[in-house]
Image (cartoon, rainbow, N blue to C red; front, top):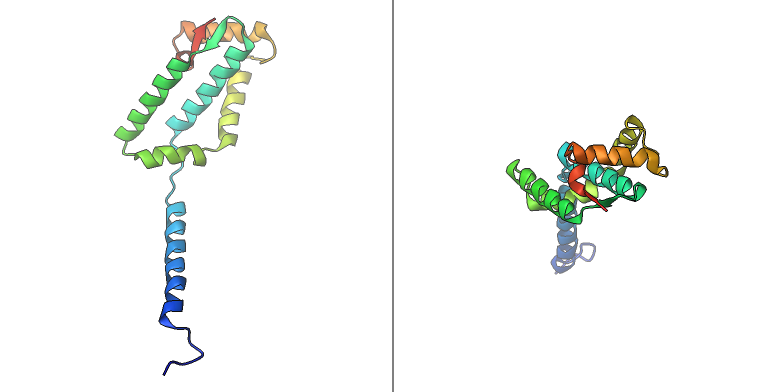
Length: 141
């Protein structure tokens, strides 16, 4: 005869499965890797290129360059031992504050006022002329 105060084995199993599933989720969250600097820099460079293209009528965003850059970044990260799952997860662990700080630092260091083409265009042209990492995401209008 079963003890009335103790739940049956079939009632305890779902609780055990839920506890095990919760533990799995916690472990997965705990092992989510933050993005490496290379990923954060790429994200910042893409945003800077967008700002420069938006502020200068003679410069455009080079979507093909962004695609190539993303592919090259993925290959580089894979060669460093990051898995496709790690790389996909970086988008959710990327700190927007860090990216914004890098963008703000770039704009300040280069004297760029995004609403003033007279400050944006020379910087965009310089990036293109120097074939910088940002230039890979820019094109001529």
